[in-house]
Length: 92
Image 1 (tube, rainbow, N blue to C red):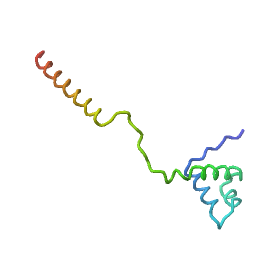
Image 2 (cartoon, rainbow, N blue to C red; image 1 turned 45 degrees about the vertical axis):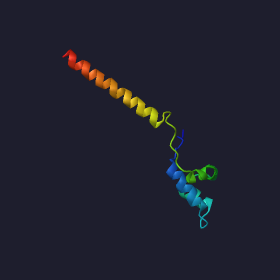
Image 3 (cartoon, rainbow, N blue to C red; image 1 turned 135 degrees about the vertical axis):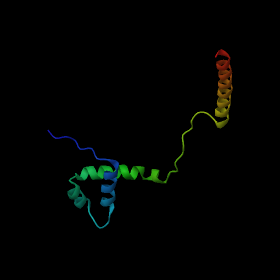
Image 4 (cartoon, one colour; image 1 turned 30 degrees about the horizontal axis):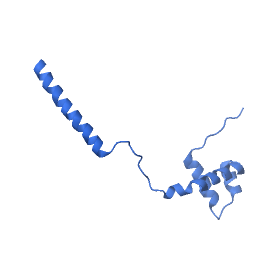
């Protein structure tokens, strides 16, 4: 019974880049790493399908609340904290 080998993204990228080198062949890369030609071709398809993402600027996702809303929440919590401190002093 053989176990399926899982390769990380860095290894796959290295294999694909080597297979794209005009001074080598897919067969040479296949033999070097012990991979099938279908595996390398599959990785190449995925690589080319996602290559445009390397040039997409990183955008931060919306957190759901604006800076003004967060400032209001901080203000409310500051007031509540102040009130609780006064009550705590009165009770001790």
